[in-house]
Image 1 (tube, rainbow, N blue to C red):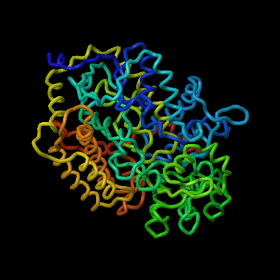
Image 2: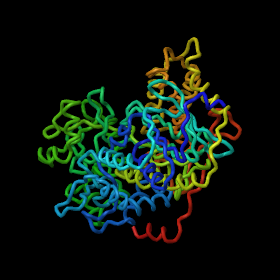
Image 3: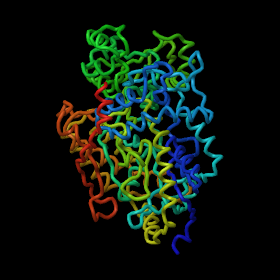
Image 4: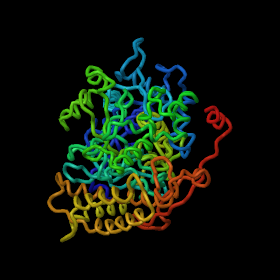
Length: 604
């Protein structure tokens, strides 16, 4: 058999990705007494989740007793401009408090209120202080806790391993094909069910906050296996990334800075966000009608700061200030925390931010403002899944976390990503284990393994060809320019033309040297995934003729209240297409609200 030529491992459940969603899925599947394999592209504990700083959103009610799952649900739906899958938003809001308490029970050390409860802070788009946090390094604490709890449950961990293809037989996933990044040797994983938890796609943009791993692997693997992608037009540009020095441009500055009182100012030191308070956001975010009216009148003392409006609003406002010539010297705006917080408070509540600016930019944020600007941060789009199980339309294939779509609609609220990982990582792990128990032993086709091997080795076989690093830089430039924060028909069409050019060049990439530690080879294989998700984003962005959430069309500046408010855009391979094939795009109606959910929304 062909598979005998390759290193082979077999598990009931295979989880690809070891961030928060992957680890939580692995913990849940292991608890169901099935064999679990956990594959990570980097080292265990190095997942991009560690970069999540501000906190995990859950309606614990520790700071504001009026908070509950219904308020959190409404905030999430409003933030997503009601394009969310309501069932996912409901499950998320209802289960998040239990998942946070569970994490605490496993050893997570959250900041505390004076009476010993988990402390919660304000964040953009959340009506009440809701983010449980550990200073400004919450993601790191989450990964530490999940990892230490999970490794005792008997799962097998495969580090520095990249999966390049899912193996599918008869419409059911049966495993995965990949390679060890150190040696380049191939490895086959046989599995009864597979969970994708590979994270985001930010590396397709020139200015981004994502780690090197965020190349759209899970989204591309699922699509190529026959699954569907949804909401790919919605890419969140976080309002506050570093803009100086150039070597660290895009590095994230947590929303927790504004949650702790930080204010945004233009070059004239004006708090410009008051100029961008639309009545819609004032009425949604203010706690009372009187407070909203005072906001709109420009009363700086009224309730919640406009600097904590949803991320899409703040990012567009910063973009507008810079475009109007009112930006900071390096093309951003100023973020000031030191006028409202003491140096001791800043160092205690935002230690990572203090050290980040001191070491990377030689800026003391206890005395000087930060320069900030929008940075490619998070995709609301991803693999289309069933809300109750996280299963895709490919039997036995599940997805959770950032690589799955549905929860966040057109714009994610800060802090909802970490509770997303916990809630839907658990659900995916539970149902993947259940599916594995009822599935036959996986039978892997030799031809599929041979085809995956040939595909991976193709760059070595060419006598001449393109440099994969140069193509990646080209891709990032084109996506930043044509499919960025502000979009227009002509730009999107030009972007798609560039993507076609890059797809052609990527098929001619040349790699030299051995397979050991070959970074060029790794980049060449990642290019396929990045080009695929880039095309999906550009096609969906061109098709959606309105501005909603993180998708802003300059030629269609209004949010539509009719047709576009009722459909998600779904992309799939054209039937019968070989390889990547052509993309089919379909408008899929949003699920109807049941009476009880409609009543919850109407309460707000």
